[in-house]
Image 1: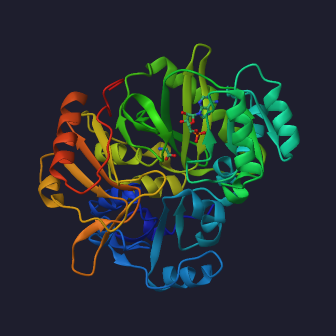
Image 2: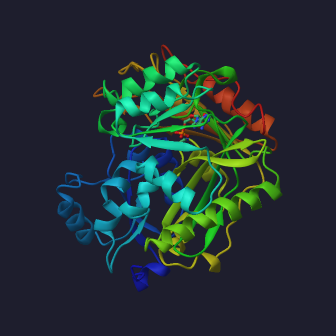
Image 3: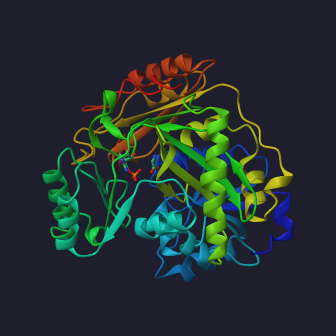
Length: 437
Ligand code: AMP
Ligand code: GLY
C-alpha cells in the first residue's frame, strides 16, 4: 500500500477529480463542502457543474501520456486523486498515479478487472463460492450459439468487456439470444468488448445495488440503493446507463444486508487478496434478490451512476476524511454519518436516448430548480454554449436529486424540480422511488 503522505492525514489538501458525469458532479459538490479542500482540480471542466467548483487540468489527459498528468500532480502539489469512472480504472490510472506523495481513491487495474472483464469476475466468484447466476464463457461464435440453442430458457448474453453499461442483452426467446450473440461476436456492436461473451442463466427478482468502501482490509458497507436501468416506467423499454436511483431501499432487511456482506463482499475481497490484489476504492455489487437468496449480477469497481448522487446527498461526514482514510487503510478508525432522510435522484435524458441522444438543445429553469429546498441539480450531459446558454450534450443530461423526510417527500421534491427544468424532448421516468423507498 502507498504510504499516506503525512501532511495529507489532516490539514488542507489539493485534490484531482477524474471524470465528468453526474456522479463526478456529486463528488465534486461533496469535496467542495470539505473544510479540508485546498484546490479542486478537474479533468472535465466541460461539465458546467464541475467547472463551477474546480480549476481545470490544463494538460492532455490520457494513459499514453500519463507522465503529463503525473507532472501536473507534482507541480500542483495534489495529494489525493479521485477516479470516478471505470475506463480510467481499467486503463491503470490508479497504478500510474499513486506514489509516496499522492494517494489514489480507486482500485488498481488488476482489481478493476472485476468490472472490466466479466469472464474473470465470474471465475473469481466461482472460486470464492459467491452466489451468482450459472454461466459459461465463449470466444467462439459457433460454440456460443450451440450452447444457447441447448438451453430450455433464453439465457442472458453479456459482452465480457466494458460497454458503457449497455453490453447486457436480456432476450425474450432463444432466437433473440442467438441474435444477441451474433451482434456481439460477429457484428462487433460492442467492439472488442463483445469478442468474448458470458452466457448466463436468467434470474428473477428485485434488483438492488450494495456499495462498500474498501481500504485494503476493512470494508464499510454504504446504505443500499436501487437503480432503474430501463428507460420507461414499470421497467419497460431498453436498458440504459440508469434513469434514476434512490437510497435507502427498504427492499433489503438488515439480515439480508449482513448476508450480502458475509457471502459476497468479504469473500470477493479475500479472493482478490489470495491473488495478491489489494482492493482500495468502491466495490459495487449489483444483486438480484431471488427466491434462493441474493445473487450477484455484476461487480462494478466504482460508485454507481446514478447511485452516487443520492448517496452523496445523504453523506453527512467529510468526504475528504473518508477518502483519505480509505487510501491509508484506516477506515476502521473513522465514524461515517448519514442523513436520516431518504434521497431520490431522477435522471433527465435527452430526446433519442439511449440510441441517438439529441445534443445542443437549450435547457431552461436550472437555477430555479437548484434553488428549491433540499434539491441538487447535477450536470451530466450538458455544455455551456459559446453564448453562455446551457445545452444538452449527451444522453443522460441532468441528475435531479432531492432529500425529504420520507421517500414520498423526496420524490415530490425531485419531480417538482424536474418539472421546473425545461428542454425540448426531455425524457424521464415518473416512477423513481415508488417501489422499495
Ligand atoms: P449488468 O450490467 O450485468 O448489471 O446487467 C444489466 C441489467 O441486465 C441488470 O441490471 C439486470 O436488469 C439485467 N441482468 C443482468 N444479468 C441478469 C441475469 N442473470 N438475469 C436477469 N437479468 C439480468
Ligand atoms: N448505476 C449502474 C452503474 O453505474 O453501472
